[in-house]
Amino acid sequence: MNQNTKDLSSSGAKTFYIHTYGCQMNVRDSELVTNNLLAHGYTLSDSEENADIIIINSCSVRGKAEDKAIGKARLLCARRRSPDVVVGLMGCMAQRFGEDIFEQVRGLSFAVGTRAESRIPLILKRLEMGEDNISETGNFDDDTSGSNYVAPLGEVTETRISSFVTILLGCDRRCTYCIVPDVRGKEHSRQPAEIIAEIRALADSGISEITLLGQSVMNYGKRDFKWSEDIPSPMGFTEPLPRLFELIVANIPEITRIRFTSSHPTGVTDELISAMSRIPQLCRHLHLPLQSGSDRILKLMRRGYDTATYLDALKRLREALPDLAVTTDIIVGFPGETEEDFEATRKVMEEAQFDNSFIFKYSPRPGTPAAELESGVTEEEKMRRNRILLEDQDRRGLAINNRSIGTVTEVLAEGPSLRNPKRWSGRNSQNKIVLFEPGSRISVGDTVLVRITRARPQTLFGDLVEKSEI
Ligand code: 5AD
Ligand code: SF4
Image (cartoon, rainbow, N blue to C red; front, side, top):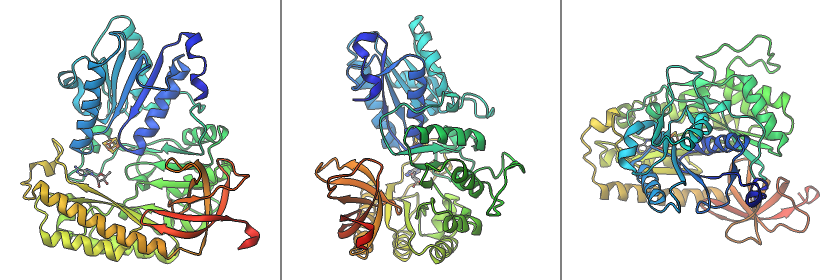
């Protein structure tokens, strides 16, 4: 049980539960709202059924994600155990639908958009005063308005070792299929001092690994602020993201691992590669969405690179970092994607030797330029292409992982595996899940050495070894 749920029955404080869909940024936003509500005297409920306030943090990236959140919200509203139970929606869908969401979900108490979530405590008070159907969406033109980060620092969630930290809000890129710019607004970089304070609080609560988040995280600080000359760069970096890495390392020694996502191929600069090879805390993993291996489709997607540029970025990365793991996102069935385009994607994926790939079936998003295009690809065909790419990836992932059998890898121990609690689970620098027999003296957060004995496409298995045994 979480430390914050202990005194529920005696305190009489209202309890809340947040149900999170979507990406890592949503996970972090839910934590920030959690912290904010705890600071306002609410307590966490350990189950949705018992909570006085249930909040759904929603995602709009594909139609299916929206259907899930709407279905869940409808169910919660229909089955609330008393009329006093508050059911609210936050996140990308709340931003996209605005007031119209109340037509979709009867009985919803409030909807709060992506940059207004810090106002949830205020909204709860207004609901108590008798208001209903409150809708608030953040104002994207005013960067200072209602970002989540007015939430008090100090991390009070469960014991864990890893956390996300959003450093870049919004997105200015406008890929033709993507709803994100509409629901997360203009790109806005958080100030280094604010980020450092947040990571300091996380480190104080036991976090040793952080993942810095942004839609195009390499754009961090490139446009909307000038890096202060007072902050030196001992490694001689000029780009804001490498300088932020240096600042984190210099100020927060408890952070032993730093990851960042998502990357864009055009952001793979020599300086970034240099930072990755010179700063030992930076992990050997990059999530570099390709989206398609057809230059024609990449152009229609307005991705801003072709396959040659993508593969060149990969080559430069791997030359400097031979043990780098690279993962990707692919969309199948973009409007007009032919068999030839699809085969081109298969070919580039093989050439790129991705360690893992996330394959998505194209979903038209209202208001995006691609939604205006004639599809030409049936649902069955999307499913077939999806299946083929997954099979390819399984084969490739297994071959790559098999090559690591016999090697020793450093793992940050996360705790007993959910499937088989006799085994422990952790991740190595390449972000691969490693399962191992725990032995007798192991604690959550320990860094251990594991010799790999067996592999699956997405998992490594092995035995603990001592440094002296290598
Ligand atoms: N349809 C399908 N997949 C999408 N993605 C983004 N928008 C869409 C869409 N309309 C995928 C991209 C992105 C990932 C987070 O979701 O591959 O990288
Ligand atoms: Fe979903 Fe994109 Fe919003 Fe994340 S930013 S929750 S992926 S729509």
